[in-house]
Amino acid sequence: MNTTIIPSASSDDMQFNYAAFWMRFWALTIDNALLIFVMVIFSLLFGIFSGVMHLVAWPFSFFSFEWDGGYGYTGVFKMTVICWLYFALMESSGWQATLGKRMLGICVVTEAGERISFKRATIRFFAKGLSAFIFFLGFIMALFTARSQALHDMIAETLVIRR
Image (cartoon, rainbow, N blue to C red; front, side, top):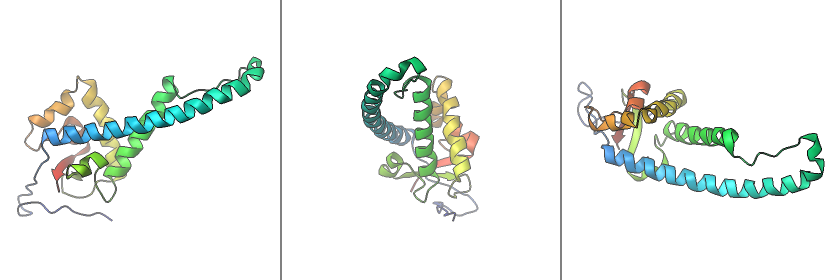
């Protein structure tokens, strides 16, 4: 079910109340702090579990039996999947926002003002990597574009607006 956010002007003009750069910045900061907290807790829990399992598996180490404590490439992959699912599921949900965005009263919509799909939210998430890769200029673009769109918003054809 797609819900539509009603624009602040007539539907002919489609004028939205775009979220300011700093609102988006603080929402992302809140989301990142939350994700870091959750990942630290899980790393501690699974790190302890991994350490215990390593001690249990020690006598069998000649079989090259190793336990990955969630570090290295495997850890980066796990963190990427967790972040992707968090952002994509939350932004494509009925809330249309992550917890940080919701706290600041902003949400993500299509350029037509509709709820974004999981596919579009996924494209938006991975396009953030490009926005960050070029010295975060993709994010800073939101300061200078007419609709406060960052590079990843342009790629995914989304808007971040005030509710």
